[in-house]
Image (cartoon, rainbow, N blue to C red):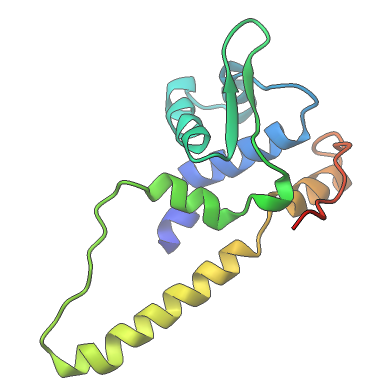
Length: 148
């Protein structure tokens, strides 16, 4: 998981989400692939997966493209990671070894839970503010999400 977080795929997708979140209109896959200097085909499959998981909206047509399906305050790195890893076969640990059952597996679960909590705290909204403050994207006119 740690390798995946630092992968080119994850870097491109998080960057694409920042561009989409900062845009005043839907952003086409062609435009995103140009900004990110990557193949449109490479990027589009992951963007579609994010749309299937309710993070993005995808519109076809001349004025189509991708836009956020929910507030950037409600999109975080854990959401993106979960969407990309959905459908992959995850091993469910079973072992008759008492050391693994009582010590190793609980420690690994604790580490996974801590990592998931940290990823959930990294929100797209924070990335948008930082990117706008650095002059890398236009400031979006989005307001805080106070809904419960």
